[in-house]
Image (spheres, one colour):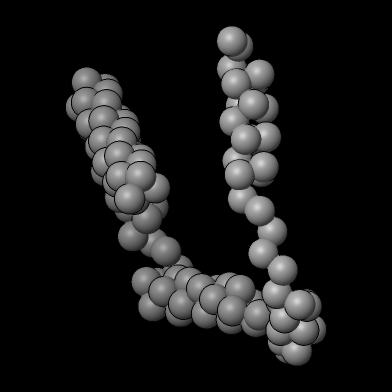
Length: 113
């Protein structure tokens, strides 16, 4: 028996095995009395988070003397030997891959439970 035929057979058996219990319209009446779901306007959460992020970035830029520390650090990094830069790039890649792997394993365990 191929898989789809077996699933169809099992589905048919389960539908036929569960007879409908007549409740004299009770289920329909209860569902009609339930309040309709209220659809709220879009949340302002995204706009607020984006605004706070832009504000915090602007404050950090001003307080850091126009981001001069970034330029200074890039100049220091450019003076490093090529082998050290390669090692730094390799270590960063391994670290990001390991973090992604741990996150994926954690998510799969979360989905299984």
